[in-house]
Image 1 (cartoon, rainbow, N blue to C red):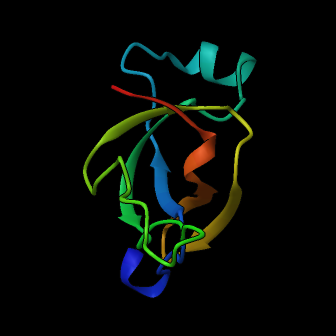
Image 2 (cartoon, rainbow, N blue to C red; image 1 turned 180 degrees about the horizontal axis):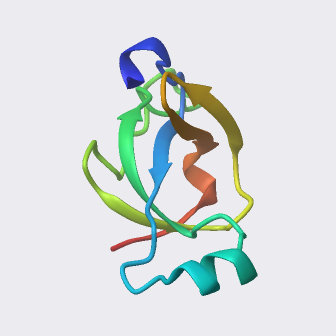
Length: 93
């Protein structure tokens, strides 16, 4: 899935996680995107002024907390992924 979308620089690809205790009634009322996601792919890191790359602080498989509307959404095969900057990640869970 994420092999077709390879992030560059300090960007990453994530997939939203559904809340564990969701019910169909709450899903209808609260249809906002999740603010928790799993990292599917990471870029190589931001290029610094000295030409070196800053290491990415997240890795594939990490669960992260981010803004509900952060990044750009793309449909890949049968799933929706988000492409966003590392600056949109608020915490690693």
